[in-house]
Length: 202
Image 1 (cartoon, rainbow, N blue to C red):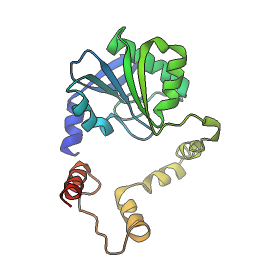
Image 2: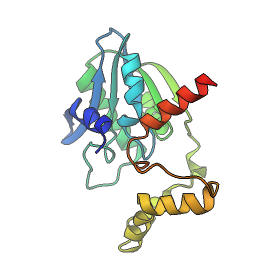
Image 3: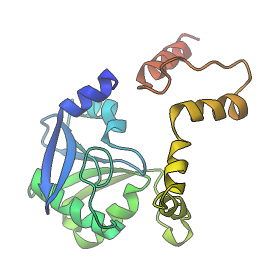
């Protein structure tokens, strides 16, 4: 486990909402509250640098949605409406009666839309990053059902292991002379920072 991920976990908190455990990070002590909602197949960990920056002026909270990250994995399917139900009660527990600013990415937008419809009094402002709402044309559900098929789902999941991804990237997606760093599958923050520094120095 990378030091950054371990630090993220150790600094996390938990809240039990309707019998389900929510993992979340909370930083800062400002009067204004900013909620960072992650997208599909991501977690609050993706906001780790944003958390640090925003916490200088705001109280910032980044939860893991149920079924993702370190939050509980319910036995029953979770619709966007059900996720909104849990999110509302999470906000009630953690922020009490205060209105919040919400930043939502990708998958979080339809969830937030249900929350806004039922409890607009809870939200002060909304910032949308790469969101989608036209659900009838959203065709990503098939792979999720596919993952639940015995054996085939396990095989499909196996194909996303780092050595397999390394093979596909090396032979199909990058130039032949490209070489992956030995620890490429670990935390990428160091590489990103280095790339940014090299770009600034040009």
